[in-house]
Length: 285
Image (cartoon, rainbow, N blue to C red; front, side, top):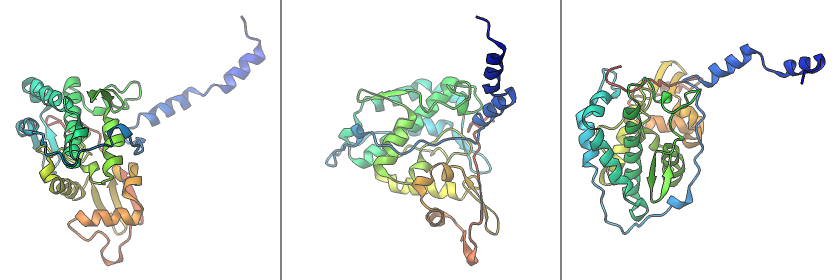
Protein backbone atom coordinates (compact mmCIF):
# COMPACT_ATOMS: atom_id res chain seq x y z
CA UNK A 1 0.00 0.00 0.00
CA UNK A 2 1.36 3.41 -0.92
CA UNK A 3 1.57 5.85 1.96
CA UNK A 4 0.01 9.22 1.50
CA UNK A 5 2.53 12.08 1.67
CA UNK A 6 1.35 13.43 5.01
CA UNK A 7 1.66 9.95 6.57
CA UNK A 8 5.18 9.62 5.24
CA UNK A 9 6.10 13.00 6.69
CA UNK A 10 4.65 12.03 10.08
CA UNK A 11 6.52 8.73 10.18
CA UNK A 12 9.80 10.36 9.22
CA UNK A 13 9.37 13.07 11.83
CA UNK A 14 9.02 10.43 14.51
CA UNK A 15 12.09 8.45 13.47
CA UNK A 16 15.33 9.35 15.29
CA UNK A 17 18.06 10.77 13.15
CA UNK A 18 20.98 8.57 12.14
CA UNK A 19 23.26 10.78 14.21
CA UNK A 20 21.14 10.28 17.30
CA UNK A 21 21.07 6.51 16.81
CA UNK A 22 24.85 6.41 16.38
CA UNK A 23 25.32 8.56 19.47
CA UNK A 24 23.14 6.24 21.52
CA UNK A 25 25.06 3.23 20.23
CA UNK A 26 28.38 4.78 21.19
CA UNK A 27 27.07 5.75 24.59
CA UNK A 28 25.70 2.29 25.34
CA UNK A 29 28.86 0.62 24.07
CA UNK A 30 31.12 2.83 26.18
CA UNK A 31 33.55 0.71 28.24
CA UNK A 32 32.97 2.99 31.23
CA UNK A 33 29.18 2.74 31.20
CA UNK A 34 27.85 -0.09 33.31
CA UNK A 35 24.63 -0.44 35.23
CA UNK A 36 25.34 -2.57 38.28
CA UNK A 37 22.63 -5.05 39.27
CA UNK A 38 21.04 -4.56 42.66
CA UNK A 39 21.59 -6.97 45.52
CA UNK A 40 18.53 -9.22 45.26
CA UNK A 41 18.41 -12.38 47.39
CA UNK A 42 17.58 -15.69 45.73
CA UNK A 43 15.93 -17.38 48.75
CA UNK A 44 16.74 -20.91 47.51
CA UNK A 45 20.39 -20.35 48.44
CA UNK A 46 19.80 -18.76 51.84
CA UNK A 47 20.37 -21.97 53.75
CA UNK A 48 23.37 -23.44 55.54
CA UNK A 49 24.38 -26.09 58.04
CA UNK A 50 26.48 -24.41 60.69
CA UNK A 51 27.23 -27.80 62.25
CA UNK A 52 28.83 -29.04 59.06
CA UNK A 53 32.54 -29.81 59.32
CA UNK A 54 32.89 -30.57 55.62
CA UNK A 55 35.86 -28.83 54.03
CA UNK A 56 36.15 -28.36 50.29
CA UNK A 57 39.59 -28.81 48.83
CA UNK A 58 40.54 -25.97 46.48
CA UNK A 59 44.12 -27.13 45.91
CA UNK A 60 43.53 -27.67 42.18
CA UNK A 61 42.47 -24.03 41.72
CA UNK A 62 45.50 -22.82 43.70
CA UNK A 63 47.76 -25.01 41.57
CA UNK A 64 46.29 -23.57 38.36
CA UNK A 65 46.82 -20.05 39.67
CA UNK A 66 50.39 -20.84 40.73
CA UNK A 67 51.15 -21.98 37.20
CA UNK A 68 49.59 -19.06 35.32
CA UNK A 69 49.35 -16.06 37.69
CA UNK A 70 51.79 -13.13 37.76
CA UNK A 71 51.74 -9.36 38.17
CA UNK A 72 53.09 -6.29 36.42
CA UNK A 73 55.14 -3.39 37.81
CA UNK A 74 51.97 -1.63 39.01
CA UNK A 75 50.94 -4.69 40.98
CA UNK A 76 48.11 -5.66 38.61
CA UNK A 77 47.47 -9.40 38.68
CA UNK A 78 47.85 -10.98 35.24
CA UNK A 79 46.94 -14.39 33.87
CA UNK A 80 48.71 -16.29 31.11
CA UNK A 81 45.48 -17.23 29.38
CA UNK A 82 47.18 -18.66 26.30
CA UNK A 83 49.23 -21.13 28.34
CA UNK A 84 46.29 -21.96 30.58
CA UNK A 85 44.13 -22.70 27.56
CA UNK A 86 46.82 -24.88 26.03
CA UNK A 87 47.96 -26.75 29.12
CA UNK A 88 45.37 -26.59 31.89
CA UNK A 89 41.92 -26.23 30.33
CA UNK A 90 40.90 -29.75 31.33
CA UNK A 91 42.21 -29.35 34.87
CA UNK A 92 40.22 -26.11 35.25
CA UNK A 93 37.09 -27.76 33.91
CA UNK A 94 37.56 -30.68 36.30
CA UNK A 95 37.86 -28.28 39.24
CA UNK A 96 34.66 -26.47 38.24
CA UNK A 97 32.85 -29.79 37.71
CA UNK A 98 33.92 -30.89 41.17
CA UNK A 99 32.51 -27.73 42.74
CA UNK A 100 29.22 -27.83 40.87
CA UNK A 101 28.66 -31.45 41.94
CA UNK A 102 28.36 -30.16 45.54
CA UNK A 103 25.21 -28.67 47.03
CA UNK A 104 26.69 -25.71 48.96
CA UNK A 105 23.57 -25.34 51.08
CA UNK A 106 24.83 -28.29 53.16
CA UNK A 107 27.98 -26.34 54.11
CA UNK A 108 28.56 -23.82 56.88
CA UNK A 109 28.62 -20.14 55.93
CA UNK A 110 32.40 -19.76 55.79
CA UNK A 111 32.77 -22.77 53.49
CA UNK A 112 29.92 -21.45 51.37
CA UNK A 113 31.48 -18.03 50.91
CA UNK A 114 34.82 -19.49 49.84
CA UNK A 115 32.96 -21.90 47.55
CA UNK A 116 31.03 -19.16 45.72
CA UNK A 117 34.01 -16.80 45.37
CA UNK A 118 36.24 -19.54 43.96
CA UNK A 119 33.51 -20.80 41.65
CA UNK A 120 32.86 -17.28 40.34
CA UNK A 121 36.55 -16.66 39.65
CA UNK A 122 37.14 -20.07 38.06
CA UNK A 123 34.08 -19.69 35.81
CA UNK A 124 35.29 -16.24 34.73
CA UNK A 125 38.68 -17.64 33.74
CA UNK A 126 36.89 -20.49 31.95
CA UNK A 127 34.83 -18.01 29.93
CA UNK A 128 37.97 -16.12 28.93
CA UNK A 129 39.94 -19.14 27.76
CA UNK A 130 36.94 -20.45 25.85
CA UNK A 131 36.82 -17.16 23.92
CA UNK A 132 40.57 -16.50 23.84
CA UNK A 133 42.14 -14.58 22.19
CA UNK A 134 39.99 -11.62 23.24
CA UNK A 135 41.01 -8.18 24.46
CA UNK A 136 38.19 -7.59 26.96
CA UNK A 137 35.68 -9.74 28.80
CA UNK A 138 33.00 -7.32 27.60
CA UNK A 139 33.52 -8.74 24.11
CA UNK A 140 32.46 -12.23 25.23
CA UNK A 141 28.84 -13.18 24.43
CA UNK A 142 27.98 -9.54 24.58
CA UNK A 143 25.87 -9.07 21.48
CA UNK A 144 25.81 -5.81 19.56
CA UNK A 145 26.70 -3.57 22.50
CA UNK A 146 29.39 -5.89 23.95
CA UNK A 147 27.83 -5.98 27.38
CA UNK A 148 29.73 -9.06 28.52
CA UNK A 149 28.86 -12.57 29.67
CA UNK A 150 27.48 -11.86 33.15
CA UNK A 151 23.87 -12.74 32.33
CA UNK A 152 24.71 -15.92 30.44
CA UNK A 153 23.79 -19.23 32.09
CA UNK A 154 27.26 -20.65 32.66
CA UNK A 155 26.83 -23.44 35.21
CA UNK A 156 24.35 -25.56 37.14
CA UNK A 157 24.46 -26.08 40.91
CA UNK A 158 21.90 -28.08 42.91
CA UNK A 159 19.73 -28.26 39.81
CA UNK A 160 19.69 -24.48 39.32
CA UNK A 161 21.17 -22.83 36.24
CA UNK A 162 23.31 -19.89 37.27
CA UNK A 163 24.85 -16.78 35.75
CA UNK A 164 27.81 -14.90 37.15
CA UNK A 165 25.39 -12.14 38.12
CA UNK A 166 23.34 -14.69 40.06
CA UNK A 167 26.39 -15.72 42.07
CA UNK A 168 27.53 -12.18 42.84
CA UNK A 169 24.29 -10.23 43.18
CA UNK A 170 21.72 -12.85 44.22
CA UNK A 171 23.88 -14.99 46.49
CA UNK A 172 27.12 -13.41 47.71
CA UNK A 173 26.09 -9.80 48.19
CA UNK A 174 22.66 -10.29 49.80
CA UNK A 175 23.60 -13.22 52.05
CA UNK A 176 26.89 -11.89 53.44
CA UNK A 177 26.43 -8.14 52.97
CA UNK A 178 30.19 -7.68 53.10
CA UNK A 179 31.84 -4.84 51.15
CA UNK A 180 34.95 -6.96 50.71
CA UNK A 181 33.15 -9.27 48.29
CA UNK A 182 33.81 -6.64 45.63
CA UNK A 183 37.56 -7.14 46.13
CA UNK A 184 37.32 -10.93 45.96
CA UNK A 185 35.30 -11.67 42.82
CA UNK A 186 37.29 -10.96 39.70
CA UNK A 187 36.03 -9.81 36.29
CA UNK A 188 39.25 -10.55 34.36
CA UNK A 189 40.01 -6.86 33.80
CA UNK A 190 42.95 -4.62 34.63
CA UNK A 191 40.68 -2.21 36.50
CA UNK A 192 39.23 -4.97 38.66
CA UNK A 193 40.57 -5.83 42.10
CA UNK A 194 43.28 -8.42 41.59
CA UNK A 195 42.53 -12.06 41.03
CA UNK A 196 43.92 -13.66 44.20
CA UNK A 197 47.06 -15.75 43.66
CA UNK A 198 45.52 -18.68 45.51
CA UNK A 199 42.08 -20.05 46.29
CA UNK A 200 39.96 -18.58 49.06
CA UNK A 201 39.51 -20.95 51.99
CA UNK A 202 37.12 -20.93 54.93
CA UNK A 203 39.86 -21.02 57.55
CA UNK A 204 41.68 -17.99 56.12
CA UNK A 205 38.71 -16.07 54.73
CA UNK A 206 38.84 -12.99 56.96
CA UNK A 207 42.55 -12.49 56.38
CA UNK A 208 42.22 -13.03 52.62
CA UNK A 209 39.32 -10.59 52.28
CA UNK A 210 41.17 -7.94 54.27
CA UNK A 211 44.28 -8.46 52.16
CA UNK A 212 42.27 -8.13 48.94
CA UNK A 213 40.73 -4.87 50.16
CA UNK A 214 44.08 -3.49 51.33
CA UNK A 215 45.81 -4.35 48.06
CA UNK A 216 43.19 -2.72 45.85
CA UNK A 217 42.67 0.41 47.92
CA UNK A 218 46.42 1.07 47.93
CA UNK A 219 46.67 0.78 44.15
CA UNK A 220 46.08 3.81 41.94
CA UNK A 221 43.32 1.94 40.10
CA UNK A 222 41.50 1.73 43.41
CA UNK A 223 42.21 5.08 45.04
CA UNK A 224 44.33 7.93 43.67
CA UNK A 225 44.80 11.30 45.35
CA UNK A 226 45.12 13.85 42.52
CA UNK A 227 45.27 16.94 44.68
CA UNK A 228 43.72 18.53 47.72
CA UNK A 229 40.12 17.35 47.79
CA UNK A 230 40.49 15.73 44.35
CA UNK A 231 40.29 11.95 44.15
CA UNK A 232 40.05 9.40 41.39
CA UNK A 233 38.31 6.24 42.56
CA UNK A 234 37.51 2.96 40.92
CA UNK A 235 34.09 2.91 39.34
CA UNK A 236 33.11 0.05 41.63
CA UNK A 237 32.57 2.66 44.35
CA UNK A 238 30.10 4.40 42.06
CA UNK A 239 28.39 1.28 40.68
CA UNK A 240 27.98 -0.23 44.15
CA UNK A 241 27.35 2.89 46.18
CA UNK A 242 24.46 1.06 47.84
CA UNK A 243 27.00 -1.29 49.44
CA UNK A 244 29.59 1.30 50.41
CA UNK A 245 27.14 3.82 51.86
CA UNK A 246 27.38 7.58 52.00
CA UNK A 247 30.46 9.47 50.91
CA UNK A 248 31.55 9.72 54.54
CA UNK A 249 31.02 5.98 55.06
CA UNK A 250 32.91 5.19 51.87
CA UNK A 251 35.93 7.24 52.89
CA UNK A 252 35.88 5.73 56.36
CA UNK A 253 36.01 2.31 54.70
CA UNK A 254 38.84 3.37 52.39
CA UNK A 255 40.79 4.84 55.31
CA UNK A 256 40.56 1.54 57.17
CA UNK A 257 42.81 -0.05 54.55
CA UNK A 258 44.74 2.85 53.02
CA UNK A 259 48.38 3.33 54.00
CA UNK A 260 48.12 7.13 54.30
CA UNK A 261 45.69 9.58 55.83
CA UNK A 262 43.41 10.28 52.89
CA UNK A 263 41.60 13.14 54.60
CA UNK A 264 44.46 14.45 56.74
CA UNK A 265 44.64 18.12 57.66
CA UNK A 266 40.97 18.78 57.10
CA UNK A 267 41.18 17.58 53.51
CA UNK A 268 37.71 16.66 52.28
CA UNK A 269 36.59 15.04 49.03
CA UNK A 270 35.35 17.90 46.89
CA UNK A 271 35.93 16.45 43.44
CA UNK A 272 35.70 12.71 42.75
CA UNK A 273 36.33 11.13 39.36
CA UNK A 274 35.56 7.48 38.64
CA UNK A 275 37.46 5.28 36.23
CA UNK A 276 37.75 1.63 35.22
CA UNK A 277 40.04 -0.20 32.79
CA UNK A 278 38.21 -2.99 30.97
CA UNK A 279 41.29 -4.36 29.19
CA UNK A 280 41.80 -8.06 29.79
CA UNK A 281 44.20 -8.90 32.62
CA UNK A 282 46.26 -10.90 30.16
CA UNK A 283 50.00 -11.35 30.60
CA UNK A 284 50.50 -10.80 26.85
CA UNK A 285 48.74 -7.41 26.73
